[in-house]
Image (cartoon, rainbow over all chains, first blue to last red; front, top):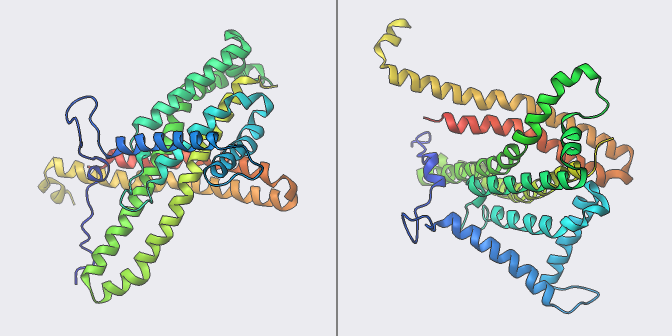
Length: 259
Length: 85
């Protein structure tokens, strides 16, 4: 019995998918791209179908999902951070939430089992989009110099401390924010995928080893795999929510000057 | 010890150091955020217990605090992956 010789695949092999169509060109399509395209389509179909339904007092089916999603974003994201002024960002935040959620949740859907957001391209693109939006909102609502003054010289700090505070604010507001926003989503999905792969490989190897390993797989690693799958559902929803609410917080911070 | 070092090829030695560094990077990076997330969640729970009517707002702020604290641990995780031989 060889319990310790677990054959764990190299990390690159878990995240690099071979191209399916148009191999070698700029528009090569692989599993990640297919998941992204399908999550775009699912988000659009969800809201288009919900919008086509006749307005009723008690929404059913797709409309129920869409309405509770919109309600959730309005109550726990927009009203908590931006207040009534932020209602115009509702469509952006809602569609971004559902897009990230559908690209994350494929992590636990059987036979797909790959979180598309564990590739850095889309998280960093979304984060740069958010960076552009909150800067444009800041410049439009406070003016260019007002926005710079409010974000680089926070009020209520003793004068001599600006020597330290201003460089820190410059780096953290304009450089680190999009980076940390993207890394937070990406690294959570990579960690979740690695965790699930670890327990799946461990279960399969121990199951195949037989004897004591069979019992170990049955009572230790396989229940852990099920537990982790549940935990990853939570993480997928939570990361979509955190990305959305941080976007709302950044937009709110540049919309209203701090007092 | 030094005989052993002399016998190993320098490439292998560097690879070993890199593996140790990768392991330490994640382990050390998880200490601070672990304490930090504990503080954030603990204080949020005591705030919710004192004022249950403000639980919604506290929960949102708690997730924000967790997200900011967790970023440090995740950066350690990224370094861990980048250092993988």
